[in-house]
Image (cartoon, rainbow, N blue to C red):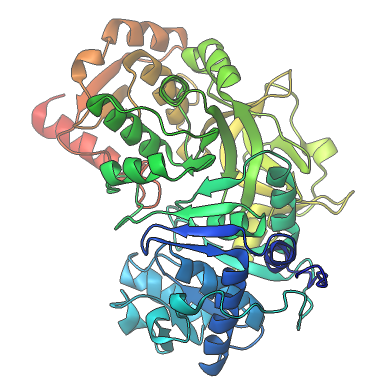
Length: 533
């Protein structure tokens, strides 16, 4: 019935992926939406996207526009994002719950004619465009599949360098930066992940859901009030994951920690996953070991990535991560990140390097020399949205090859075997009389003693003291101060003072894993002054 169709590619990596599935497997399930207890085939998604396109066009969206999208994970989110693509516009993912002044700055910069959101829409009072709700549109889930559109129809041609998606950084270093993702980066990521046996994915991130649909995977979308790691309903999450039939899940370290703790407390079996992944911070070996043990027989992998560089920059399997950690992390040498796969290159440069002339062959540091990690390749975004200042700071153009290298802001090194190691964020390196202090490396070293998921190191220069700070829900009896002092002594550092907070550690709202070190330092200074630590 459908063999008469051939795919006419548009040059848009995600649209072309959906069009291919509509031709090759139109009736196969593309989305399992647990919020609405519904399933939708690839042809249904194409139909819903066409309906969303019509609605968006009626509201004034035109090719080249940005469209703010803050819908929860749902089939409506996927339909409207693909509808935006069909118009020729760009979905922009914003956090509507960020501080009002920050949100207002991002909205003004985007100049989007339409904001797609459920009601009430947080921050709508800061926006003078049209707020569009899917429930008031021609998108009707009951009608999905009643009309099979011709998936070969392509009305617009896209260049490989055209922006397809616009994501924003977490803003932990200032105003969030818009990062344009193009078909170049997305096609590279799809080539990498499409080559494996994974056919279904449980998604906690909207951009991962869009890419998974384009790769022809079945996407499972949860029914959760929030997917924020610290606030996620872990019991509901487990129940939904366990019955979803998913092959793969990528989640933040805190989500995995909470899930496994819940499984242990209630004597629950592991969900039947084939592969699991985590990233988002320095990943401790203890968590990786727990994932291996409790999620078996699933393969555990740890990719390295950022908003500016699509997964994976590097990749390391659980066995090697644990082995390398016992050799290196245990001695304060950082967290192993793995090696770059195809389409990616990694180098290290002096952290104080300043352009404009850059040649990685000359400016790249030799093995085991510490500096800033820089990355190049097909999954590296090449610019920021309306932020020339950030481009000048973060992007280096190789004068010999013309390649763009992205400065990750991560401090680390490449060892003699080609393995990349992470020490800490460049901005967090602390100068001391004992030499540079890398907080993340010390945290992971001491976490191997305590078994804690998350801790933070604070160094007070005027006192020449190190503090090992951990949250309220960790057991202080796990702190073996003698062993921790010996490890510090080997690095010629002062012994740590443990600090058990009565609250959680201050972290970023997106992953709940990036420590707000400035705020934490003020907490420790207050405790020293008032409680005589």
